[in-house]
Length: 346
Picture: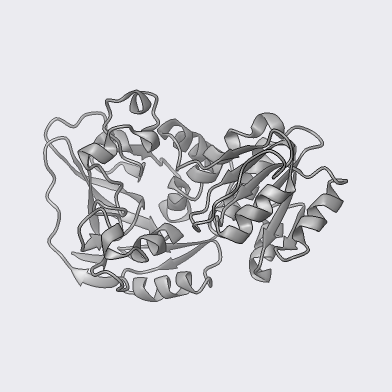
C-alpha cells in the first residue's frame, strides 16, 4: 500500500510503498478515509537524532478516520464497515488517568513504550492502518470524515483547553485567541458555542484574520507590537479573562502573559517552544498558567456532537497521498488555510 512517511532525520515526507498491515488479536484494521495534517508533524520532523524517542521510518498522521475493514480475535462492540474516528493519545488503559478516559495523561505510556499513531506508532497517512484497541475508536455516524477528521486533534485540543476556563467566561468576559490557524479557528468557534465571552483573535497573517472573522471572532487584530495595548484598550485596562495561545512561541507566550486579567487564565496550547516566567509582579495577580495536552476520549465525543449540531466546522484543503509532500511544503510555509487533509482513496 501507499503511505506518507518521515524516513530520515532532517528529511521531508515521502510517498512510499509498504506492506499492507495485518490485523492481530485485539486490534482493528481501518481502511483510511481521511488523515489530517498538523504542525505537530513539523515539530517531529524538526527533532534532532538524539531527541527522537522512536525509530524511523514513521508513517505520519495522528488525526485519522476510516471504515472498519477487519477485526482481530476478541474484538467486540464494533462491526465491519463502521465509520469511525481514531482517538489519538493512546494509553495503557489501566492506570487511574486512563480509567477516567484521560489517556492523554496516561501515567504508564512512556515506560511501556506506548506512542500515538503518527507520533511514534504507524499513523493514518496510508491506505490502511492498525488501531491497537477498539476503545481508541469513536463512531462518526453520518459525519463526513474528510471534513471532520481534524476534530480528533484540532477540535479536541482547543475544546479541552477552553472547557477548563469556561467558569471565567460568562457575560462581560473577554477571551483572546492567539493564532487563528488550524487549531485557533476551531477554538474561536468553540468559544462562541460554549461561552458568552467577547472573542478577540490575533495573528500575523491577514488571511487568517479574515478566517477568524468568518468563523465568529468579534474582533481580529494583527499580533504586533501594538497588540497588548489594543487588548488593554478594548477591555478598559483590565485585560482578558482567558488567553489561549495556539502558537506557543516565545513572543506569543509573553504576549499572553502581559494581557491576562487579574484571576485570568493563560493556556499555552501551541508547541512553539516558548516559556512564560511566573511570579509575583510579573503578571496580574492570581493568573493561572496551564499547558494542556490533547483531550480525553469523552471530550472527543462531545466535540463530535458539536460538529453534528453544526456549531463547529473545520476549514479544510484536501490532497491525495501522492500530493502529500507538496501539501507539507504548503504547511511548512504557512499557506494552508484551516487544516490540510489527506484523502488516501480519492
